[in-house]
Length: 255
Length: 245
Image (cartoon, rainbow over all chains, first blue to last red; front, top):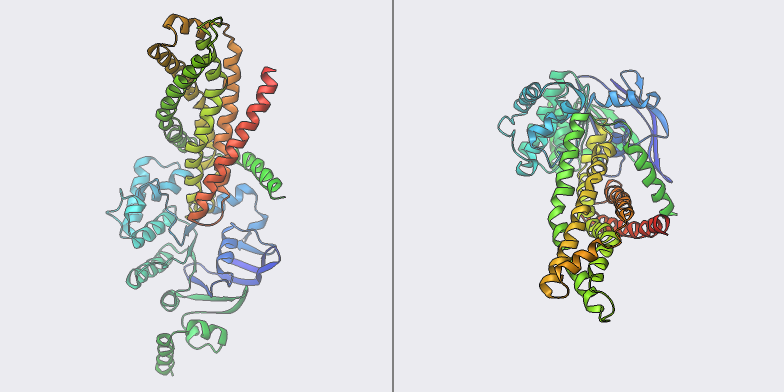
């Protein structure tokens, strides 16, 4: 479980995060949503330790990140898997080498063991035939799946995804969403997804945090988001006519 | 103020580069890859330039010695001194700042833009040790490239001299062997080691700490070339003053 208490972050005079408190549980897909500039990416980077925060605390299963030594932070980071918005696969390596990379860095596995493990996770993300492809030869969806495979290859406790659906067609986006949800349940990990894809919110948002101007404006799930009266949330989530109709139908069906 | 900040950041980068070392089997692979990219991949252009510039130095020296009282073997002597003291270590290093430096900046800068460096950091890997340290070690072999440049420069001078009819082969070889001071070679290699360190670290600094997108990668490469050249010229002066005067 990840617990965030009263998190503040600023860049110069600009306050980006203004006291966010929340928690992310194991086995659930947690979504952070909000408009561009609401502080989602900064929040995610604070969670990952890429940005240091001024006040507040982030604890991973009771271990407060800012109180850890450099070695403890490194050990903790080995338990984190991350899927970047642009996949961030290493250009100079094949997809298989990318997936084996965390194993090469953090384990003492033999080459055959690493290849076996890479094979298992690549099959899990339906990329069994892409071992020897370079990232530049793979489609956007394949790159995202390879990034997910790399993120889970070392059995992480925590999985972070920064806009995993950006740049993907709707069908592939749903495949990626479902894959992340299945992996979260299967591996019983804490998954935090940064997204502004409303399809993802409705499909896999077991816990949703809505950020606005660096503050947590709302917290709920894909079920409660249909019923909320919070105008800030409804303005954002139901900005399209399609989603307005979906919401209306959902409320009518559940009355 | 920004310059001071960058100088401080550069030295912090050097310190950070030696912390949290990458596993040796991985590091060994990275060093060998960088030796191939940075040294072996540059030998062709180094050899080509050294041979022909050696020839040009010889022709110009020969053409400017019009006084019949000056012995012809001085052409070989002047060529050797020019190539060993300045051309091979300094001029080739500035060319390498363009070739190797821009390669380093653009490759690391592209990794920054495409979040590959963030991916390393999230995994708990020291990005500076993983990316910059192997380049520093690989470029410690740079003096071998400079030794080849010295040899080919003098050989190019000999070819130009003999086939151009400026002096005889015997005169040229006599000049090359005349008043040879082994310390000049030591001086040239001390300079080369310092320049190798600059060639690895300054472009890496500009790539690693760049901000922005593809356009900024290009700008960072240009800036890296300018600063590497400036530092090579500046340290060339300081080292020459310290070691030869």
